Length: 437
Ligand SMILES: [Ca+2]
Ligand SMILES: [Ca+2]
Image (tube, rainbow, N blue to C red):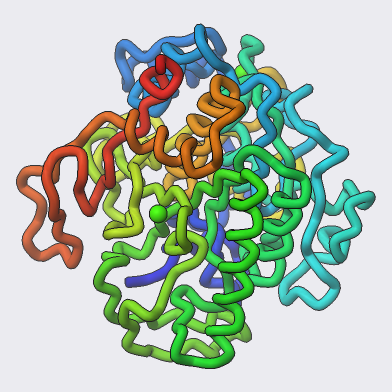
């Protein structure tokens, strides 16, 4: 049970980014960088993912969108007029696949001068007039935003809801920490602004599990719960990643990574059901596990809080394919962490139409597929309560059964029958069905 197995960020003190992208890459030497051009990438994808097609240059790479039947939904709904908040590390305001798709006016940074690991450029202390502070200085937030709402514009990819409007809500530092006070502030703001949907591909630092029997953790947990409930009462559909710890959230056992700040303060502790991962285990949250090209992703959390599954990618299931069956989506033009170069060296970076795209995997990538489906539902049913939208996402999912031949040695064992399992919840999100009714 390690946290995000990422050593992407070349800082020994930052081993535990709460932004939930799985995958390990070594920092690259500059001379090994090899960004793949869009036409070449499309050709490689056509071989690796036969039958996957679509209108934009990198559509042949979007196996994930075929799985959730996104293109088939677009005749009925595209997310037009729907506001989706991305609570993450910011968004790239200059990404060509989000041109015209970001509401800069509503975007805001909730990184404070007191937030550990914050870069001064990210700090706005909740002053929403500071737009520069929202700019994505890494890429995770842009990846999430483009899965939801990349435009249909010939270049790059097409998102689940390509005419939805993205609101960048920065609650994570470029070092990958998403402290609870920033996350709660972003949730309250989403409620204030009555956003339609928010996506949280993160867990709130500094605790993976907040335990209600410990006073300090109970207080933070309560703050997050109140903020989430406030947003929901104001109509916000909250969609969250289940997490990448290979845990059964219904039967947690050991948390060995908390607190993850300050450095070296983590203790190994036994956790029980009075301990919760947030926001994945908060009430009413649409919690999303991750699937690869074949089955549950090797890293995905599972268990009772999981409502649905969606593609998050998983390289061990498809090692021979271009991109390894990960998810291809946008990356920031202002990545200051060196990840872009590292991904390029690993043949996982693509340029199309002047925009950056990378192959990464995680429940971080699964959650925005469900958030995009929520946006489609909102467009078609603006009168729905947030709870009804959440119900609709579950009811229209493609039912899945527990996998055959799941390794007995795995701590995660699937329970339940078709359409209601501990691995996949109600099943694979299905944009076409969600938009058909
Ligand atoms: Ca596009
Ligand atoms: Ca849930």
